[in-house]
Image (cartoon, rainbow, N blue to C red):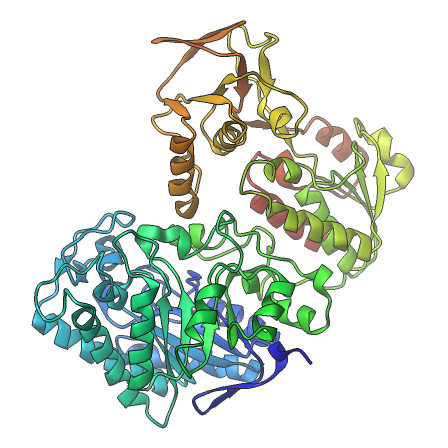
Length: 634
């Protein structure tokens, strides 16, 4: 048996296997921090699927320390009944549960709490855009007491384990970090001083929990800031925490000032924290838990087999596939729906104050509402379009017992996913294409290559129900000279259908335009982005956008903002304020729905649905969600 599925003890708490559900904000609690049925359903769904222990996302220990409006809280006794209802439900479903107690510190927001944030130093957080005040000695004493009370309430609420949040730039981490702690008293300066307050908090929590529940810490192995907390100091902190009585150490990375290392997008290497956990295991006796883009079953298995950590903490991977552990236990690796690290449905939504969803899993966050149940009547379902919406509709329809045929004008499945995966650092989108293909084969879905231009083209298939998922095509803006030979479409460039010259202007600075810029700049092409708005990349999430701007700057990509294109000539693009000499103009100016066949099919068949970009051009996540929901109606 794989070591992954052997039991482990954290203190006196025995866990059935080495899989922890990592603490990750999910936005599913009620406004103000009360437990909701939705968050219970989300955790219970994973608890039923062999997770040994679930660690909640951050639980606020103080009103001014809450980072998000839809985040669990424990700063008052009124929260205990709801939390007890949640822990009881998780226990009944077969898992243990830990509370991650925290204070957001300089990463809290007055917009959320109505209160001024507190921090070791009055240093604003750029991402949040706030104005924290420096903590007084009285604040430090009060906050220690709040952590102590939070631990007491956690025990009353039925938690099996308490995790103290030493990571991600929150209050305790911001004391540890030289980047955010500029104090000159006994709580700042040397590592010994910077550790003082976090360690005082930790000892208070351990004293409360002694003999009742183990206490662990989660700590950033590296803050990934030039003046931030580095691993050499982290090792010292971990050894001091062990001496204080901590029963395990969970490794993560980053802070809001290096947010891409906190919730790692696809440009961060898979398993990047494993070397840290391997080294820390040589320094401490307690179990070491590792996280960080563990979206490969082979990689996860090797971590334990090669003794590089004692447990794995998986967050987004269990959002993407709630059955991940069962599939690994059954060696059914090809059936795993891996997280692609896009962050669109999880952390991007949470940062907007919404509950999570997932690009690859339309059920995530809607665990009780969106169930795949057998259809009352098995039907012959024809789906037009083999992109994400069509493939998801086909998968769910087949699982519900329908006979399914996909019709597409090209002889491959996946729609635009290969195009989306073409730019640098975007290849993990192909994980989802591969999953959908494996389901297509496993479920015995039929495929016909045909360009459907009217209802007549599918009549011979005798469908009982038709799903139209024909996607969208790039739009061509009405610009003088747009039909010139030097004008090409971004998709043709990304698909390798067209070679461009050594200089290009890209019309459009949204997702497609900026990714095409990266793609061409990586090949040595001089790129100009021409955007009529006042900024590019407005539709790109917080964990990606900083890296994008860094890459564009490094590659010398020039931005022309608030720019109106007057004309395209055979060797230039003419703007209101001048012209740019280029070999090619690349169009990335939006999409229009491929809906020309919709009305004819609706006239000729009784049960017709539309899903994805045929309704309105958006993102893969929207297409997958609509494909799922449509299939549940058939």
